Length: 224
Image 1 (cartoon, rainbow, N blue to C red):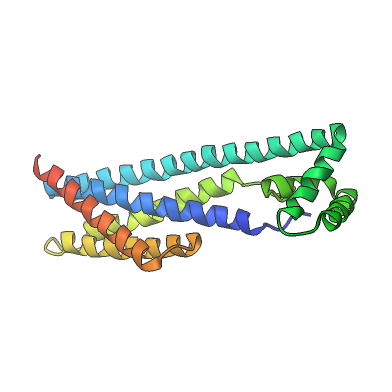
Image 2 (cartoon, helix red, strand yellow):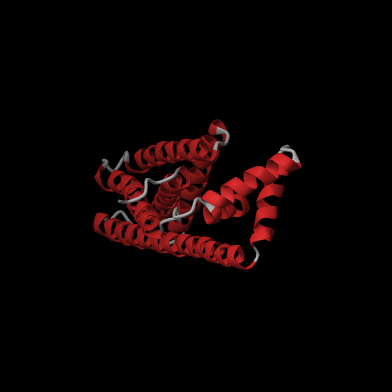
């Protein structure tokens, strides 16, 4: 029977999705405005935008997979180390767990009793949780993070691409700017909620960054 995901595992996929969507929309809208400023040809705009969307989505997925795999490997290595330490230096591990509770205001005698009972029942799970804040058997999933990043980057990048291609010529640029700013604002809101940050600041920051990205790339397109 599969273990139920803990909060860190669930947030891992959500975090990857938010980062993927942010990169997806910014990279795609940047390419779109560069190309659209240089040529009105819809096929050229579609080709450039779609190629960048695919490249960005797979790049984000690959980066997430490598990053989360490294984190997961580190966690597993820490668990293996503590498993050996329990065999070679049980008293040292007992003392480390007791000290953990002492540092949180528990008296030495009570801390020793808690440590002894916990190590008698779940020695490895207790040690890795106390030392590394790792829930035994729960590791970050690189595939889940990669898929979340890939899908979110593709979907977010698709929004400005659709706006640029299908809006009437006289509304193409302003409509895409509005779509991008709204999407960037939503992504900023989600990122702030997940990270428990300042929502208003995150929204404003994301919208401003998206507008700056558009302005820079539009300027580059006009040069050609």
